[in-house]
Amino acid sequence: MIRGPVSLPRFDRRTIITNILALFSGSVVAQGMTSLALLLTARQLSADIYGQYAASYVLTGFASIAFNLGLDIWLLREGSRKPESLAEYLGSILAIKLGIGLVWFVLLSAAAPHLNRLLNSTAFPPSLLRLSAISVWLDCMLASLLTSYKARLANKMTSILQMSSRGAWLLGTLILISANVVHASSFMLLRVLVLLIAFVTVLLLVAQRIGYRVTVLTIRSILRAASPFAASEFLAWASMRVDTLIIALTLGQTQVGIYSPAVGIVNALHMVPATVYAVVMPVLSRSFSLNAAQAWLTTRRMLLLLMVLGLILALGTLAVSGFVPRLLGDSYAGSGPILAILSSVLLLHSLTFGMAAVLVATNQQNKRVIAQVIAVTLNIVLNLLIVPTYGIRGAAVVYVTTEITLLTGYSVFAYRKYRAPAPLSSTDPI
Image (tube, rainbow, N blue to C red; front, side, top):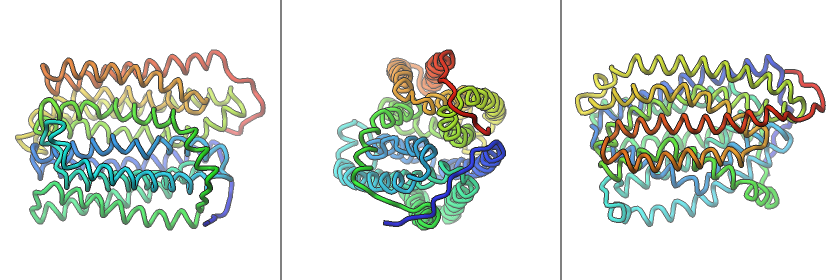
């Protein structure tokens, strides 16, 4: 059992603004390096091979929900509410991800040689799929460690750690390209090595700052509470990634390779509004339990900030969409129009993050799942109907439609809560 010193985080306005700026700046740099690493990888591998790289990562990312269980969202909320229990929550969550994740990897490795035959596809080479699984597993473990910093509003350290790992990944990508490596497995192995080093480093740092405690009772309690968060994570993944999987199964790996860079840029840019979400959600969780009126004031400010950020991201992405094929090469000629269509998602999803923060902070996770079920069901049905005929452009339009549906559902539940606010119990310093 490892313990760290317990100190309660401050939730005053200055702390919140400082954390938003720290995490925002770090996330912008980190996601910029991520996007560049992926684009350079796509350019080096060509659309056909990059399609296998992207499809394998999407499939293992989907499968990781079996052990990830949405526990980082739970940790962010509960860790901010009960900071004195953060070490126990974190240690128990890492134990869950380690134990279930090991079983998950063994089963996935055993299934890997048979997936292409079962799915009637060539998009999932077994060796690449196994490396992708290790990468996703490490990434999920690392995410929990970083979430513990976010719960304590220690986001300067979060930003430094994120930028360091993404910078190492970009540097490694440049080295592979300079060596004229053209194997997808080499680029995936690079991700594994970078994540392994980052995970061990952050594991040691968190031991000093927060510590770890593992108890069977806490593990059981977390697992009992996990179902709505796991469902939400699955549905969030499906709303953003199921189109890529459907394209892989219906149109083939080349079309995945063309579609993936565009959707990858958009999903990477989601990290900008996610920064605001990660800082404000713990604040709202505490504030709604103390002073609902002040919490709603904070919510309005958050939504205004997210709308401005989303509009800037959407217009900026639309402006540069025509340059993507020039950067990646002739085989990616179709990526530019896809990115132009998806640019509007950045405004919509920024507001979706804000509404999601309200639902989680007000203990409406089950209602959030309802909205996600509706949106994802629509997404899957429309993709299955539209993609075979209209291809990847149809999938992009479906993505936008799904985001509108999700934002509408979240907004309805958040507005209902606003119309029946919780009674005041104390004042909040925000």
